[in-house]
Image (cartoon, rainbow, N blue to C red; front, side, top):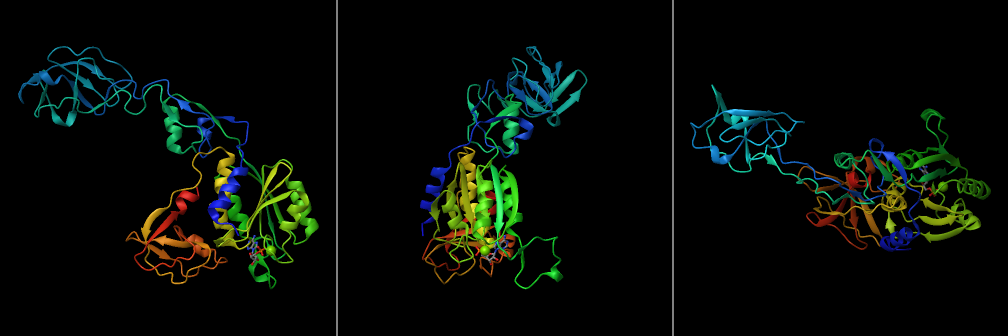
Length: 401
Ligand code: AMP
Ligand code: MG
């Protein structure tokens, strides 16, 4: 059994970035990975401008609270003024460029409008309420780097420097199937009619959703029966036209587990079993040009191994430069008195005290733990945990986007 870090490094070494990049409207690029550096051709903002509705002034013109300053021009957003006439102010609105000669803005709430101009009670501070040219983005700088996973805010930033289209990594084409003769699709059989031993296929639902969140196009190949020939046929078919084949179940060592011999019959098996809990069964191989990843059947094992291994693999196929989230140091509000030989990923929830609570049942079959939880505690092999200990926490929010 491989330690996780080693297995992940080996796995990532197989994940060559896919090509060619595609050009997308910036509107459609949320969640995709940028395949170019975005260089800004301009300063943002392009001019010093007002951050308030008010009056642009020259501070030296203020001679005390009774100074009367006439309004010599009006500058709405979208227009530009001209040099500020001596001993006057410019009416100015948020976002409008500062007129040359003005060195502060007084917000309108702090001005008294009187016959012939305005009065300002308090002395203006030089530079106040001015947004400086280039304070957001400097011309010539790389605003977003190749490999950045685009977020809504980054789309806005790209647009702010004039990009209406972006080069992004292609979608990863994934063939997904579940193995297991016990599996039944919800909708096909009503709960009251489920035969003894039958279970609903839950993995298929979260795996598909997880893949879609990573921008993959998913071909759902359904449920493959627990027979070697059927497994070989399914894998062979899926290896055409897909970058990755992802399966769940059948990857252990029982007689009903056919994934390993099927992959070996068609291609190579490069990785096998990882020293984590949940999730020991895990397989990586290649079938023709397609990558193959076999996840465990137990739902929580499947879920956790996806987040820890498949997610970074898929991000790397897209050339992303940030693959695995950093864990956060937090205190445990629970005891975990029995250490395990394997590194464990416990389902926990953040409480109002900012500490972590443990879901009572950590069985790899109990999917409720993953819904109840806010994330995982990454607990090293051989480690017990007592109330108040500092542990490493990985929030689901950073793993599910
Ligand atoms: P396996 O890895 O095939 O030995 O399966 C391990 C456990 O996970 C068994 O209890 C299976 O019934 C269960 N399991 C396998 N595939 C799924 C699935 N797609 N949805 C829910 N449970 C599954
Ligand atoms: Mg099975």
